[in-house]
Image (spheres, rainbow, N blue to C red):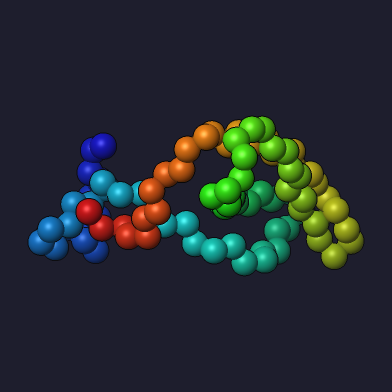
Length: 90
C-alpha cells in the first residue's frame, strides 16, 4: 500500500500515513433533497457462531412519506473467523 500524505500525522514518530484504512463514522439520519444522492457504507456484524453459507437481506431507504427505495444484499459467510482487532495503529 502506498502511503498518502496526511498533514495531521506526517512527521509523527512511529506513524506511517496511509497504511491503515480510515475508520467509518457511525451513520446518523440525514435529509437528502430530491434529485440528490448520498453515499453510505454499511457494516455487517456477523456473529462468531453463525454457520457458513449465503444469507440475504434488504436495506430499506425511507422518508417521512414511507419507503422510497430498497437494495437487496447477499452476504456469503465463510467457515473461518478473522482475528478481533480494534486498533488503528500498527
